[in-house]
Amino acid sequence: MKFSITSVLGAASTAILLALSSVQVSALPTNPIAGSVTLEKRDIESLNNYDCKLTAAHPRPVVLIHGTAHSVDSWETFAPVLIKRGYCVFGMTYGKYKNIPIFGGLAPIEDNAKEVGDFINNVLAKMKVSQVDVVGHSQGGILARYWIKYLDGAGKVYRHVGISPINHGTTLSGIITLGKAVGLWDPLQSSFDSVAPSLYQMMTNSTFMQKLNAGGDTVPGVIFSTIATKYDEVVTPWETCYQTGSGVTNVLLQDLCAASLNEHLLITESKVVLQFVLNQLDPSTAKTANCLSEILL
Image (cartoon, rainbow, N blue to C red; front, side, top):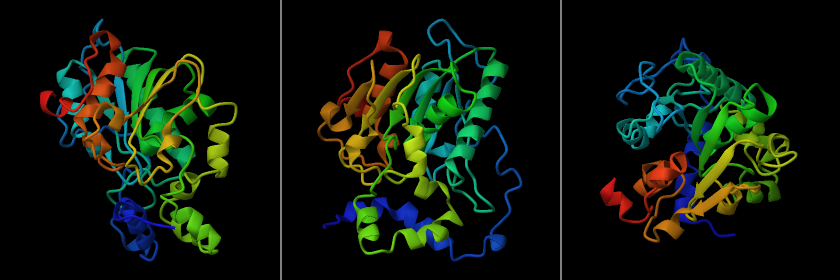
């Protein structure tokens, strides 16, 4: 079995988290707000602005949901453009686990989905609307799906845009397949679970993935769209990002721009992907998403 350099680099965040399992969690800095629903403005100006005015052109808040081992700051390319275009944009860092600093998306996925759902409910209440549009990357592309299907999110999402979403789990570029073959993968679970329980839940055919997709990977009433990259080394095979169902839009980044080399971790830096997202959020003002998007946006 062959592993490319990009495969190894793409698994770097997983390796870092595994290394953290050897650190005494009690020795890490305490995060007093871990697990709470909080507003994070930080470096993205006008994010989580409850004074933002919804309009006929943009009648729903847009909620951005980051991926595993990321934070709300991963939207530093997308959020300012959406805000400048008149969207009311919201986001938070979810899924902080124990006292591990910086990284989000580590807690059990069910807990992450509830935390994100509570955040969205807060946005709905304060903005006085009944629905939001969701844009999610990686794990962030499945949390609203779980919230809609199993918690209290039914009817609260109008559009759902997934960016390299881990809709059907991953083999992690074959690393998991190899690990299982040599009998190393399952014994490592306790180490992973001590720092990031969500990781094993995102493996292909995990109990969580089977539950998430039971009865189909879409729900009625939500407009789903997905963009994937063929250079994805985290969600593999990359085709598993796609959803099946009536009205679903599935697009490959390299079909829009063959020169795009963005892989899983950097796909949220792509202006081509950003134009795709803009087109999904408002089809009436859609512009062609192609290589020129990197210059024009």
